[in-house]
Image 1 (cartoon, rainbow, N blue to C red):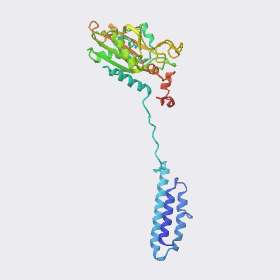
Image 2: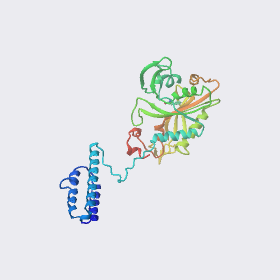
Image 3: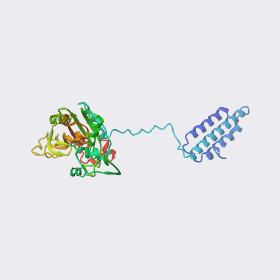
Image 4: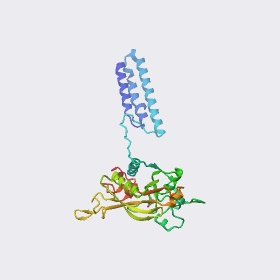
Amino acid sequence: MTLDELKDQIKTIQLQFETETSAEGLRTKYLGKKGLFNLLAKSIGKVDLDSRVKAGQQLNFLKAYLNNKITQKERQVQANLPWLDFTLPGLKPKVGHVHPISQAMAEITGIFERIGFTRVRYPEVDWDWYVFESLNMPPNHPARDEWETFFVDTPVDQKKGKLVLTTHTSNGQVREMERLGSQPPIRMINIARCYRRQQDATHTQMFHQFEGLVVDKGINIQHLKGTLDYFAQEFYGPGTKSRIRPFHFQFTEPSFEVDFSCHICGGTGQVDGNKCKFCKSGWHEVGGAGMVHPNVLKAGGIDPEVYTGFAFGWGVERTYTLKEGLNIDDIRLLYSGDLRFLEQF
Ligand code: PHE
């Protein structure tokens, strides 16, 4: 055997070793009595005399090489390290996307920012004072029953009362008046989580509301109606109309419920001579609105003889699920964390 042939065989053993994926049995296979190394070492007797010294060096090198590599692998197994094959193609991380309700909130914010509203955020665990009392609802007032409130079990503040999970974003009204030092003009859009003790196909205990508040000199119902029509067209598409119906809230006077015309039947309530299945009446009720009650302005340090304002507020989830083509009949799905559902948006 020539020295070159020996070197070729050494190379072959090294290449074979590189394909090993587990450490198990390696030592016996390569360095054992009947292992590949010994098998090759025996052939040194067949190498030409004048090359034998070099052949010996080459074999020593191979032995050290194998010993090192095997020890390395054994250590990895001991340390419980996985054997990494850096030549394997990488795993693509899953790319997520913005939750549909976050998308809706961003869209709503944009629509109001275009007409000069400022997006604000206020605490979602807030004092009774901001959630109820400053909104013209004294303690024990029956109107409070409409809001299925979660109370927080903490000490009561002498002035601001109990802590509650905000039942509506109206807690932002007096807070915004205070933030601006009771100095109108105010054009606020407050979007936040709200909480109520109810859960079914159209209610989740945690949901979102957005609240508009405008206070300035000479603000009247036409400004409110114009704002609602503007929102309806921007969010639901051209031709969508808003309708206000008399209602009652403690913090607005007069108060209204707000409806938007149905995009399926165009507000007529009829599809091909039959009742529209989506709305039944031509309209979808979405939320509440009204002219800010003088007592609320006073609670925020604003003189109701000089300034007037309007406010509106309702659920992001409901507003969103009425969008054309969505067909979400159970809003609990939005918070199910089910990717099969969420990835459609
Ligand atoms: N906060 C009321 C609700 O949650 C809605 C509302 C907001 C009504 C502003 C009037 C003015 O039902």
